[in-house]
Structure formats: structure tokens, C-alpha cells
Image (cartoon, rainbow, N blue to C red):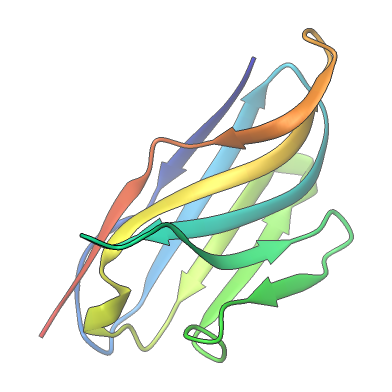
Length: 121
């Protein structure tokens, strides 16, 4: 099985910064895209940013210019640097990856347990 563990969430004032990390472990043969999603109270899950194995990135319009996604392929880890945080960035942030599990012999999406980010005024 493939597991994802997020860290780095917390409480921050508006205008501040946080860095989220997500490490994948387990029976990983390879990881394709990795990404971050978020879900605010009473709202649907939304894409924040994704990054391919080659480093191509994609961002939601709401975070462009403020958030940066990166990954360390050697560590099977993806990061989300969040700057100029706004109240509306408050949400549970989930890490996801598309990976090939060499034990189950399947390629599928895996999700972390989520980490809370709260931006206060």
C-alpha cells in the first residue's frame, strides 16, 4: 500500500506564510502527478495545484502568484509554499498522488488524511 502523510498546517495571520509537506511511502514503484487540494467548510473539494513527474505545474486561479508547488522525487515528497495567505484560504488541505503500487500492481490515486490551515484576521 501507498501512504501519504501531510504536515505543516496550522494557524497563521492573514498575509503570512505556511509550507505544507507531503511524503509518500510504501510499495511505490513510481509516482506520476502529485497535487494539493482543499476543502473549506460547506464547500466542495477544489484543486489547488498539481505538478507532474517532469516538473510541470498547474494552479488554481485563486492561488496563482501566491502559492508554489514543488517536489523532491528522490524523497517522494511534494511541497506547497503558501505566501500572502488570505482568510479564504482557510480549509483542510489534502495531498494526492497518482502512483504505481508494485505489490498490488495497480496505478491509482492516493490521498493523505488532510491538514488544517486556518488564516485569521
